[in-house]
Length: 342
Ligand code: UFG
Image (cartoon, helix red, strand yellow):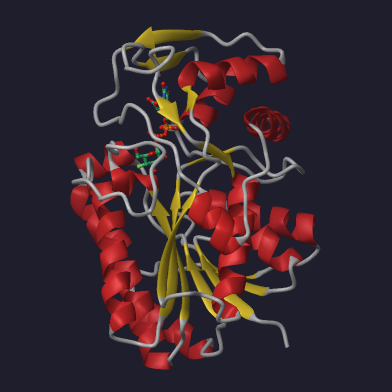
């Protein structure tokens, strides 16, 4: 019997890559996604890559009745990876209640059903945003969390706290994964980041500018206290990130964790500036990017990159793919999208 894993938000960017890894490793996957920030075609692309179409249900996990019905039909889940959440920082500032309601209520619904059915294994999508601007770099999991800079960031902090407290009071075991900056796409170029509307994040903005969908990239700030003045992040290839989720699920399913609740940084351990990302993109694509330097974007931290020692040692996982592999795969995915939109 295959272990059955529920992947919420499994048609999203990181979710879809993780479903591919889970299915390739022999897990049976059930996806719940309300399609609020992705497209239905992703399901077919996952099937094309893996040869298996995952079971799919389209509903909003904020709806407690639908969520309960779903769990009643699937009381035998070996694990749950909870990706489904809103993630646009700016939108969360404009509409905080939308973020608190969606990101917090869906988590509570899942945890209540896990408790009710005595399901134990939860992997949660957290973010390096919980650190704010850390006092020491690279940042370890023990670094104090700073006051969140946005309602989105606050939902990640609150969610971590909800899981921590629930684990103490129940038989649920959980791993929170704090992502740094996921970029890139699957080597097949069939799945990748699919921003609906104007992208907020750097890589999709670069690839859309390079192919003329956007006229110009704005580099937000060149007066940071960094080697070239632009902000520094720890970019990690989404396939490396997806593989870390597989390792986390294996750890929970096989009861290998050292504590009922564990937290891991997922990054490469390297910081790259915005200009370095642009240079990498121009090199691998052969396209000269139209960009201009503008003011800083409010709420951006200056620099952050991960100490990955704990994840490397405990999970036996290490990011493998380089910045050039990230920018090239993002570009190939953009070219594939353009082909299909012609
Ligand atoms: N950037 C630009 N121009 C753009 C877009 C981004 O210069 O058009 C810069 C940003 O200023 C930043 C870097 O590129 O220095 C990366 O920006 P992203 O928006 O891609 O990523 P962030 O680091 O801002 O966001 C990430 C996660 C969020 C999380 C946030 C916390 O995507 O989920 O970190 O800081 F909330």
